[in-house]
Image 1 (tube, one colour):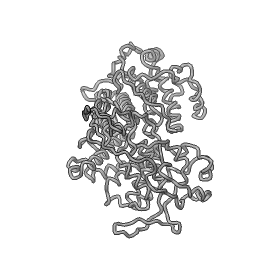
Image 2 (cartoon, one colour; image 1 turned 180 degrees about the vertical axis):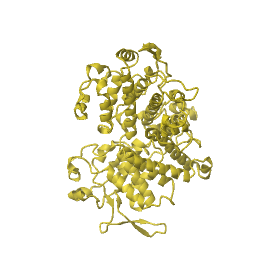
Image 3 (cartoon, one colour; image 1 turned 60 degrees about the horizontal axis):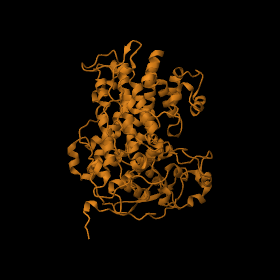
Image 4 (cartoon, rainbow, N blue to C red; image 1 turned 90 degrees about the vertical axis):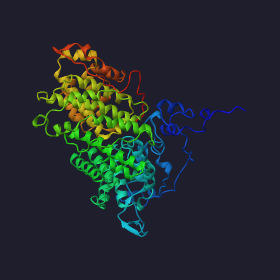
Length: 605
């Protein structure tokens, strides 16, 4: 009998990496995918039996007074199968079932009963067991089904951009909230609030007939983001956030920041972000020596927390004209030794983008730009570094959208800073950015959005709305400043700025399931540019977006696929515009020629 070499033996299951990404595996050692991506190929995962993995859970006493209208519905049995969620990404970008679970979360959230608390039928308090085994009283808490549903939604949509939790531990803790410490419960409640508010899940889908009595009467679920946030704040008050500082308390502050930021309550958001950063300094996360005292796995988790704060602070501070406190003082998380190398690779690419923004840039912006005494930073040098292509082969769709749009948005912000302070002297080697740069990066942004699923775009919350608004405003500024001849030449060589503005307005009119709060401002700014009636309002404009595209913008009507590579063409081909020679810009796309993002069109709702 001929013996088959070990490298050619066919395995009975896919390798660990292919199972996590849910893609086809050649089942060799190494398999074709791991060999192409230079990953370590292994078959260590043990196949688990399918079906329910934990005992049946029964909802107990409700907190909302309207919940008593349907007591029979509260006796409904919840099993793990009821918490299944579907991936918004294509199979090529999925991760393992510990992070992503199979069915749409919004269908399930709409069927949830009102927010319930775990309590004894005879008492208004539940108990938590202390270290010595004695029960400790505490206020009633959110029920397991509410917690578990939101945890699964977080792991499905937000974990790729906030990889700082352990999914299996969160699921286990969600099943027994009455036994959690106040610190752990506050962390879990804040994560649920941030998930609900960032994804704008309030009223995301109609409530089915069999749970209609559990709704407010308007056909929408009682699972409210504001109620979850209130519960997270209440739970936080039971903790000592000054003396009992840990990664858990830090992340609680971070999720409270995310909640308030997505509600456009920027003072609250900035307070909690600064609180989280202060805790990071207290824990010594900015020092490399701190990580030597922990095992490899825990140290890597702490590094991801630090770098998530770094990314968040730099993006938020640029939008709000704030200074930054964190610096690039520790090494980045590992990729090859990570549990999920593809996710870690995407995360590090996002870190690298924000590392290009210098601390002096933030000092200058927060000091008022030209109003202060600080020297103008080299915005053209920063923009040039941001325009370099990034290889994103195999990166999850949600991460790709984040990286590519952030890269283009930051270039537009550098243009905005350069133009608004053009008369201020800067560094000697700082050049002049081309005037039509927002049109080029705007085209690249619409290419990404047009190719991505709705869920991958909406997962980024209010931050995505603000970036689209900044892009639309910059494109409108360019278009308002161009004459008809220059507009025509720009449209022939690249794209008509009015098409871009219309496309951004269309996206803002339906992002996260409803019109963005920034939509009216951008619409007001672009009425004249689009040739709209000056008396038109948001209510009368929205049906127009759903109607066929106006003739002058028909080339954008979905029949044309946005070409990202065209954003890097030589602007010299445009010739002179109103006597001004347009300077060339570097290639703006982050995808090499010949590649396609190939995202599957999968809607969030």
